[in-house]
Image (cartoon, rainbow, N blue to C red; front, side):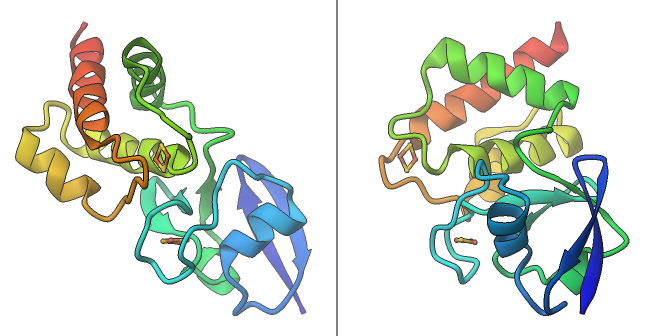
Length: 153
Ligand code: FES
Ligand code: FES
């Protein structure tokens, strides 16, 4: 069977079971390796992508779920929130090993799009499902506050 996916603005016909996780298609078929495999069971956030602008776990999103929607991965995330986050991440040297960071930025971009000036509580609530084995949580929180200030101008 094949599934039609729109990923980063491009249409792809994927020859695969519609119940296959989106993450497999992104990494193995489309070679978009910025989206990471962590737990495979929606517990770590490493695989986070946007589906029509909403952050979802691509390890638990099937190809059938994604068909007909617009999938955005870290490679093409270019909203104003994403640009502010990238700048803040660089300024504050947020990543350590970096493995979790594309998922962190995808999640944080959704947070800032919904809540331009998030409180610590807003950040902790939105980001609690994104695990960082290097425990960069303080820098992630600071990076989101910095990005919010960048967006304020
Ligand atoms: S790999 Fe998807 S949430 Fe961990
Ligand atoms: S920076 Fe290493 S897992 Fe988050």
